Structure formats: C-alpha cells, structure tokens
Length: 110
Image 1 (cartoon, rainbow, N blue to C red):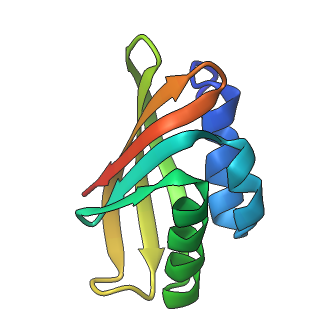
Image 2 (image 1 turned 30 degrees about the horizontal axis):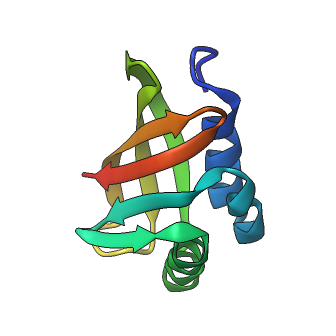
Image 3 (image 1 turned 90 degrees about the vertical axis):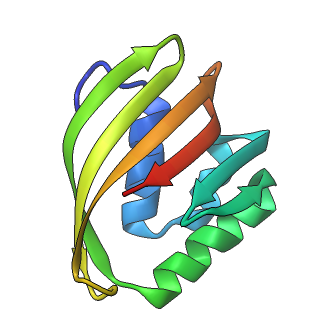
C-alpha cells in the first residue's frame, strides 16, 4: 500500500485478506455503510455479516494496484482479485470516505 493512504484503510484491507472479520468493527464508524454488488450493508453488524458471507462464498487473493487521494478524507484503492468467483479475475475500485480515523463509507465497484 502507498504511504498516502491512512492507516485505517490498510487495517481494513489486511482484515479482509486475513478474514479476521471481528477486526472490522475497529475500522468503521458505528453508522458506516458499505455498498458491494449494488447491495447496501449498514452498521457494524451488517458489515461484519457481509464480510463473513463473502469469505464463505469465495476464496481469492488481492493485489493492490494503486491508491489515489480523491479529496478530503476520500481515497480510491484499485485492486486486482484472482479467485474462485465467477470469471476468476476482477479489477475493483474501493472508494473510501473517512470520518476521523475510521471508515464512514465504502463503495466497491468493478
């Protein structure tokens, strides 16, 4: 990861890769939301459940291609995933909005 990205983004990506879903509660604000595959997951409990379901459904590796600061407290991480999901490979953008040292919003598109 690039040094311009805040620590919380690195912690989130590490927790997702390591499948340590309980660590996610330290990464997100209480009222945070995630949008992935056009589904909204709001609050810590829903976000943890989304990560558990994703981890149970697929095995994959993630390679970070770039990190771009997109404005105050907004970052885009572009990653390449390879795994056993349909298609086997995907390039995804993770758009983070931070509040303080936590993630307030994460929108994943590909």
